Image 1 (cartoon, one colour):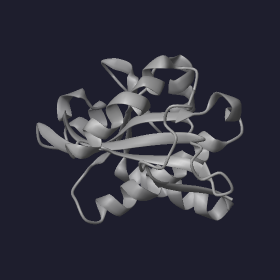
Image 2: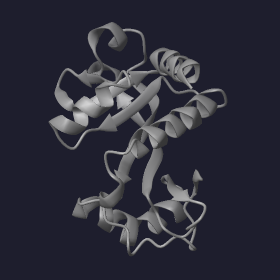
Image 3: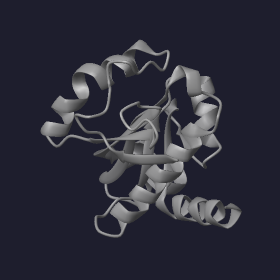
Image 4: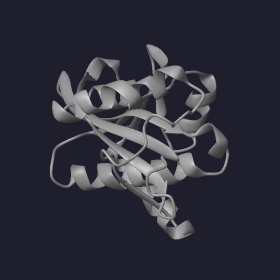
Length: 171
């Protein structure tokens, strides 16, 4: 059975390959530095029949954004600097791509962000898409491109909650 858990030393980071060297190198060499410094949290998707094999991973972090970078309808609602959550990384092992695992992880990430929003003030969820294909992928969850950089996307908290309700009804 598939499950998502916090990255631990037991997970085999060295054999993970998503086809993108930058993401592979992050998981192999940088993730622990960020974790130990409290900069982010990384979660792994595993099959409990092979609990050390990483099928995918995602990293969440908090950050701030300048409100004037948001789409106009949101920019005027917030102070000049405002807190947000960020999907810093999302990757699926090459041999398991196009099987819905990314969506499975996104739903889990959204659940975590909703939980965080109940205990910490944030206005939404951000992601930096690597390319146009990734942008299209994130847009299906309701992410909106920022006016000054179409590969930076924003999912307002209200939309995030609505999307999650739709997901729950579909399951």
